[in-house]
Length: 142
Image (tube, rainbow, N blue to C red; front, side, top):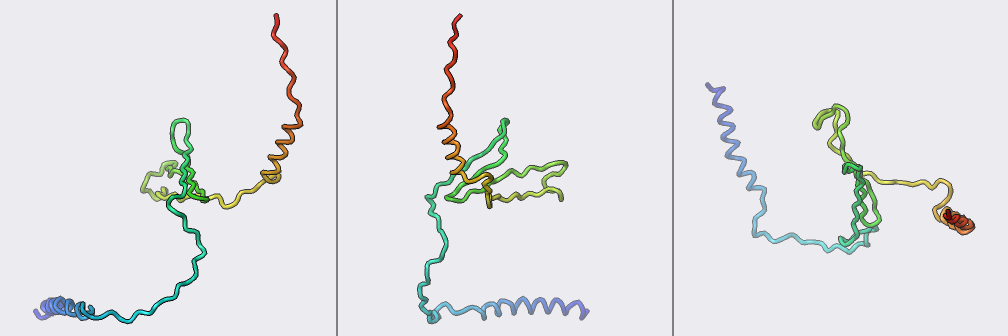
């Protein structure tokens, strides 16, 4: 009988002592605040904070049936792409093989093959200027 009563007595004592310990840790409400030190202003952080008025642009790319294959998001100078999370094969949502998350993708670096854009534009403009106009079409007389 003693083995059955001991855990019950300990639980009652713990239930009675716990609120007293919790009240002992709280500061009195009428205590004055401690002395605060004045901090010096630091330098402005080297980050760019965009205003909420920045231009946001969303462009959806769709297949002829209307299914969205990707979305281009441009906020300020940042551009990233969102792709739908299609389940391929026999994977169903919630299976081990399926993944419910699909993160955004950024273009980190773009390579210019064959010179810069300006050089290609200048070459195309020179080629268009040096090309003679086509000969006139022969008149259709019968």
